[in-house]
Image (cartoon, rainbow, N blue to C red; front, top):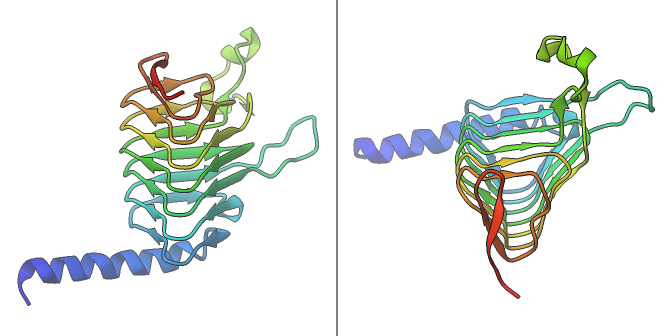
Length: 193
């Protein structure tokens, strides 16, 4: 066995061991899915991953249960079947994030349904890390969406089926199905009728 083959074998074995460890932290991981080493997971009891998906290295998955005036609501992060979440990405939810089947992300993608506080003078006087987490709405990403490297998907957004999100795009509004969006703020540059 040459050194490269041994390296690939060890890498695969490490990935399998890490997935077994992640199964103790995450509510459900479907058959054939892999969670690669170096990830940070918080609130795994509210996270599900479908079949055949890959969560690459150094991904942060956080689901936070937030106390507020309304009854306590459990956050939901669901990642569908056959998805690929790029290395160094961050998915964080206090409300609901639903990622459909066949979604692929580049590296360092942010998907969030929350922020630290509202744009309120009293809250802005506080350090950001002690401001209350608030959600302006859930994030829904339909099937077969491609999200380019370093894109940011912000609260209250619905991305339609087959959409392409350009690298570095900042998504603050809904994206129609089968469209291409780029820029900050993102704008539609192509759409299939």
